[in-house]
Length: 161
Image (tube, rainbow, N blue to C red; front, top):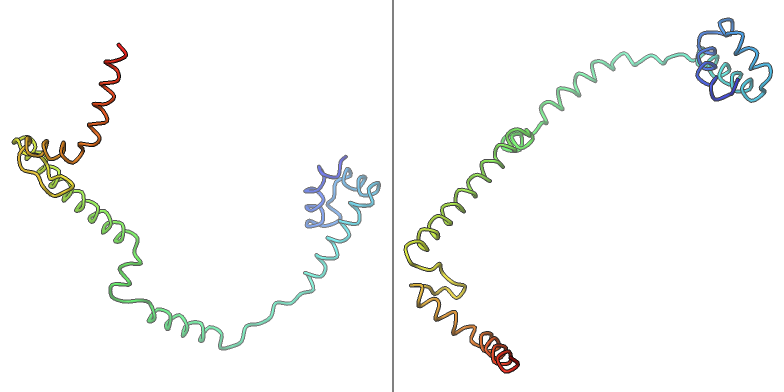
């Protein structure tokens, strides 16, 4: 048998007692010095644990523990900090905040959309905007150099054709 396959069986044999080991385990321990040493080490450890005595707690341990628990209970945060420690309340507040922001943004979009449908342009980056024609003329005036470059491109293409 291989040592790796017997590892769990060796531990069980040590824990249950030396007289409950199977013949296959006993045969392997007789032929494998590494496993025999490990079993001996485990048995020595188990014997040391059997000798160990649990220390007795002090007679006032329970009284001091209860007093400490009362102190901790009174030290818990109160007021708004206590509410922030509850995840459900924080999540609900964040959701309400998000819905409120979404409703404000939706109201602004609706007003701008209705203004566009009524024939008015939305306010431009310069803050000016009355009718579509005036807004278009201002846009053309602000970007005249860009459009002149397009005119130069159109002139060069007509010359090549």
